[in-house]
Image (cartoon, rainbow, N blue to C red; front, side):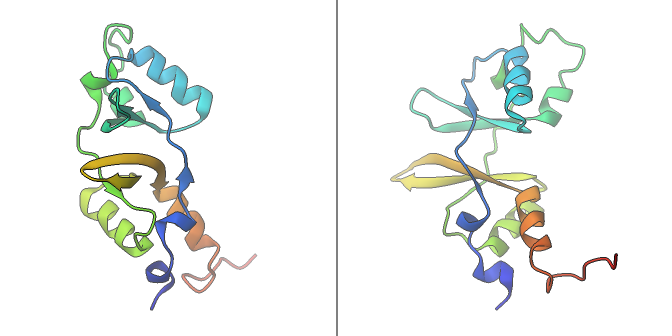
Length: 141
């Protein structure tokens, strides 16, 4: 069994999620991303259920437009790919590759509701891989 199969998302994820409402102005979305040094915000409804994700690339798509007039819901990706904390890291990586996404929402499933707990990103996975020298050979210094 490989390291990626033995390791769970819980071991590498960022805990906590930075969110915004669907009607948040893109100017505010950009401010929040800059202030918190994150590359995406989870768009949630009044019950904190994920409705979409606004990423840096989504903001770039609005370049040159009125960022006060546009809202998060206008540019967000509505497909929210998620995993639970107990998902093997190998399955999370496969989901990222299959859907060509850079991050997955980590959720606790409460019936049909998915409650956001954190994010696992490609950077988190690469950091975990770098810390495991048997996954690839480190460059000679």
